[in-house]
View 1: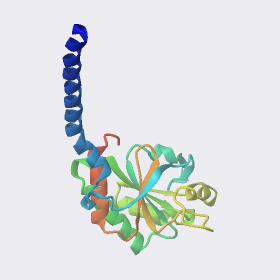
View 2 (view 1 turned 30 degrees about the horizontal axis):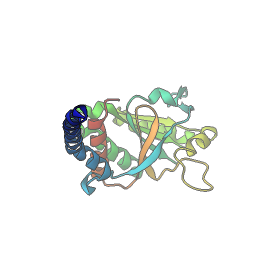
View 3 (view 1 turned 180 degrees about the horizontal axis):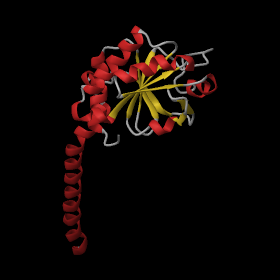
Amino acid sequence: MTSQMEGSPNRSARNRKRWTLVALMALFLSPVVAAWLWTPSSFRNRGDLVNPPRPLPQISVLLPDGNRAALDSTFGRWTYFVFIPGPCEDACRQLASTVELVRMSQGKNEKRIQLLMLSLNPAELDSLAALTEEAPAIKAFAVDREQQGALRSVFGAGAGSTAPDPSRIYLVDPMGNLMMSYPADSDPKNLRKDIGRLLRASRIG
């Protein structure tokens, strides 16, 4: 009897300590849980998130000098992909300039970003290559019809299309996964805010 009476206060003390510990953990963890459950509108992605991310296929691309290279040899940085269906004229040059300004706006992190412009018409690759002579940080390639089908499964334009969608800007992570996309006429501020957050949160690339 005495043993039971002595044990009861001990159990009560242990229970109080246990509940105190649970309460403290809840207090410290609640901001973390709240952050997962609620995101302020000012921090939402400006682009369209690709979920789950889509890995790029292993294909080869045509270089301006006529040689070929593996597409995955371009991985390693945060990369904007832009597809050009014809010659690189005014709209093409303006789009390249816009994305290049977004890249340069990231200051010391600009080297973690690159712009790949891929011609969907290999015969027009020369006009795209001329752009890279003016802006060496831009890379230009061409994708022939045989390879476009593989890219369409990642950068698809909709039913009936056999080529990637040239009306959007795509963001691919350094591991070669499509993460986000934007309309080609997006406000550059939206691209700049999204890539800035990604660069701050990521140590890859």
